[in-house]
Length: 232
Image 1 (cartoon, rainbow, N blue to C red):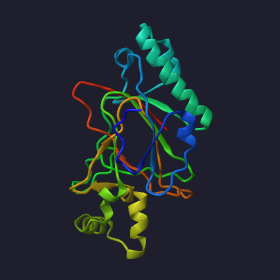
Image 2: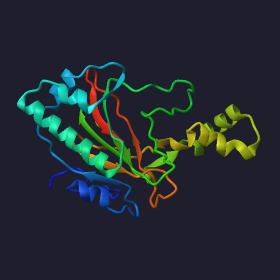
Image 3: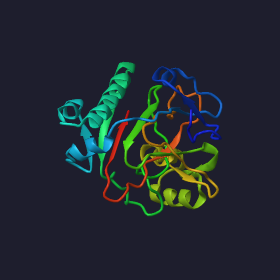
Image 4: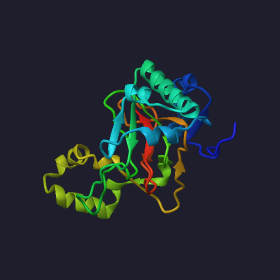
């Protein structure tokens, strides 16, 4: 099976949905990839969907109502199948047509939007699933190639100045504003694109987590091109 994920010891590659959900993450592995070379015309689906907001959730009803060619219909069947598999598993998938995500421009020394490398936090033992069908693909990073932003001295000092409260409440402040979820890539870091068509399972920061959470980010969108992705 040809893929570009060999050599990344934190990624495990599988060949079916059942393997994707059943594989036990352990050691350094905190990302599982169901590697696929999908057929079908996903660009046709994107061209026929209506963008209502910068990020528009597309229902399966809206997707099913599109008049598509044979190749477009094949792409639609794949999306609906993925949606059904994830729903049957107990997840709550969302198909999103994306022009751009909202930018965090409130603070100039730290960003907490999805373009910043971050981990997902969950109060229950669940993972993040995502697949990019069209457009720029999401990216991940090895945990040892990133530094938590709140531990970078100059950022930490500015956060302390922003907090301006008793030391005992500082960590709670960082958590409540999600500062602790964000990371900065080290200079020698090697970012990995998740690619198109692959369905990924990424470890989250949860009470039941047995491995480090996966560090990932949304890509910069390509000029004039929307993204189509499923996430839950």
